[in-house]
Picture (cartoon, helix red, strand yellow):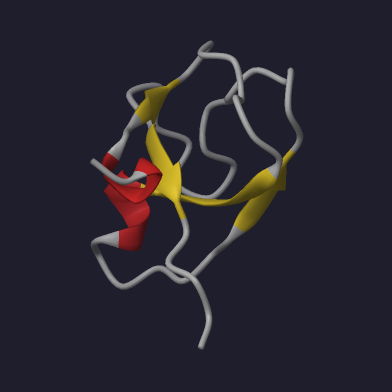
Length: 62
């Protein structure tokens, strides 16, 4: 199972510095990518403001 499939929720610790997208607003056409650093906590999405934000790693750019 790849890390790209794992979802993170508000308050979860960032396990790896990387770019992430909010699944809630990203799936509705949003393209906002956020970089979070290892050890930080995942926040409420600053774009959609949803406290039920679910974060996942952004797809790798080719």
